[in-house]
Each structure stands twice: as structure tokens, then as C-alpha cells.
Image 1: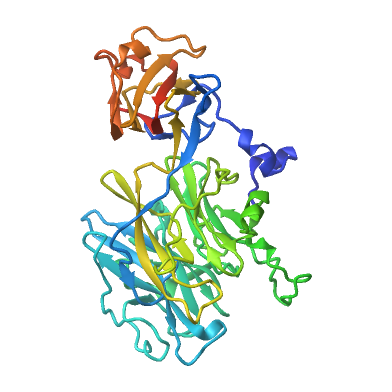
Image 2: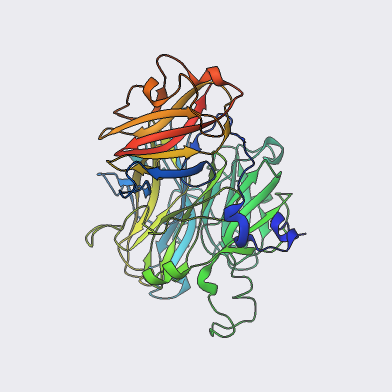
Length: 495
């Protein structure tokens, strides 16, 4: 059976109330970072100057590495990167090797999953694995790891290395979710491996027969004990037997869909439901379609890298987020997360970013594929892989103006430990007041009890005249962050 969002059982559409589906207060925040990007944690904001500039949310673009591109050749696209415990970076990416004998159409590329590794995340190697004897015949790169000898002309791509509970690993260290096109094996598939290079094709399993030719991602949701997949639902718009005539087939504007299942290694019987479609703001910008929205789960939030698509040319990247995995939010300006490069660069027309960042020190590293030509120019464009970095937890901040502003949280039950903030106040300052549920300041924890912080830190411990918030363990409080020309990203309780 299909598992619908609970609000549907009340006769309400998922988009009608989810933006107002707030957590019960006082909120039990635990010790995870609390993002201040929406009203799940922020009750209100205000300016200290009534007619002055208000507190605003600001989206922060990732910064491109000066050594880009880091990996060239193979015209790579969708990719997934992990960093092992020993520090090694490992990448699985969709290799699109051009077939010199074909100039147009589907057969222009040989599509497979290839592998690369790096000691530092900057200098990458493509090992000459030579796993497949028919590699030259089918234009496979020497570092190819996913290719079916029994179906050699099938296209395999869009890899994702899954994070799974032990019960569903089937003894494998790595489990890959990927897509395959062309019958009879077409659809979304799973395959396991003990080393990330040699994959057990004998137990390869199709879990959904969907023509979702993009980067689909699959996640285990421990809270609901189910698997959730984000994909593109073409199954009712390009169904078997339909033509490409707009009246009968259509492109469905390439909306983002969701489906779920209690079981993983079985063919899912559910059908995707569209949860996100291009809206009026997208239309103003000319991006009337979505190409994909691969998702990563972190700190209780579903983070999506949405790909607005200007048919049939530009392929952009944008951050979307959801607290329940159904209702995704975006900032009104719709700024690109990784901006297009100039005309002379490898990424000036298309940016295909993975949502699975790698944490390195105080930064999040995002790897992405870029192309120097439009989506419609498959024969002429060239692709490569680059790196863009972001401040840890730094997608969106609440920015206080120079004249000052306040970000006030909802009622929280403090779990114990110090208050740590991710804040950039190097140009101004930050002070924090602790108040009760009705905003009465708690004695000893007022603005006057704390020195102004004027610095930049992803984990700044806040103290009030030597006192710690740990004293208020179990109390219901609000945190009031006074910001002067400063950006607040997250706060958390550190045990």
C-alpha cells in the first residue's frame, strides 16, 4: 500500500498545512545543531530600529575551489562522494563516454558508473581496474565498476552509496542505489559490494521500474522505520504506449516525487507522488522544469539540491529543505547554490551537484559536475568535476543589520550542556539573552551578563559572567540572539 502523509487522512493536501505543521512546545532539541532558517525553531525576529532594516535570511553560495576542474574526461555527471575513516576520499560517478560513431540520439554516450579516489580530496586518481573484458567494444572507461555483461548496452548511472541499518545491509559493506535504462533491466536498482569496487551483480535487485532518468536518492527514515525515495515521476506522463505529443505524453514539468516502502530489497509496489512543482517565481526566472532533487538527511532535516531546468539549455542548483520529507521550502530569491562559471569555464552552462557533502574541518565540501555547453548540445559539450566549499552548517543564516536585530527562538527545553553558536560577527557583534517562556529574562543570563562576541566561529561557546547554560538543564527557555551586522547559522547544546 502507498504510505501517504498523515495530513491526507484528514482530507488535507500535503502542501496546504505542512508549512504550519510546527513542533509542540516546549521543543525537545537534544544535542543536534538547530538551524535558524525557518520557523521550526525561530518564533520571531525584529529590528532594534523600528523603521530600520529588518533581520533577513541570507543564502550563502558555495565557493569554487581555485584548482577546478579536479577531474576531467568521461563527461561525468551524477556523483556520490564519501570519506572513509582513514581519510581517503572515494567517488562513484556517472561516466558518459562519447561514441565517436554516433552524433545524435540516445546512443551518443556509453553510460556506466566509474570510480575515483583521493588522499586529500583535491588530487584524484582513476585506477585502471579493467574489470570488464568488453570495455573497448562498449566504450567503457578503465575505472568502470558498474556494467552488466549480460546486458552490455544498458546504461547504468546516478550512483548513491546508501546509509543503512545493519539488518538491511545483507552482509555488504557498501550498498549502491543506481538507475539503469533499457529493457529488460531498466529501473532503479540495488547492488552490494564488500570493497566498493567489485559488485555482486548476481544479487543485483530492481526495486522500482520507473523511467526516472536522473539522480534519484533513497534514505532510511528511522523515525518511521521506512525507506523514502525522491525521484522524478515520469511513469504517468511517459507511460508505455504514449507518444511524445504534448497532449498525450507531456513532460509533466519534471516535478519532484516521493515514494516509500517498509522493505528495501524487494520490488516496491507503491507509486510516486509529486510533491514539488515549478511555481510562479520559477516561471519569472524562466526555469519552468526541474531536472532532479537528490537529497541528503542531516540533523533531522531533508536537504535537497534542486535542479531548476531552463529547457533545453541551463541546468542550475538550488537548496531546498524539509522537516518532514514531504513539504520542501525554498528562499524567494531562488539564488543558485553553485553559480554558473564564465563562458570560458567548464561549468558555465550546467551544474550537477551532489547533496552528500564531506565535512573537512570547519567546511562542507560539495563535489559537482559542470558542463561547458547546454543540455541540448550532447555532442559538443564537455564535462568535468569540480569542488565547491561551504562553511559548516552554512546554507542559510539570519542576518542582523548594522543597527541591530533580534532572533528569538520558540520555547525550548534545555537538555543540558553549554550553548554553542555558529556565527559570523567579525564585522559587528553578538550577544545572547536567556528568557523564560513569556520572555522574562532569566537572572544572570541577560545581555548585560555577557561580553559582546566579535569574531567568526562555527562552534563558539557562550558564557554569562562565567556561568554556563548547563545550570538551566531541564528548564523551559527561549534564546534571544542580538545581532549587529552579524550572521547566525545554528545553535546547539553541547554536553
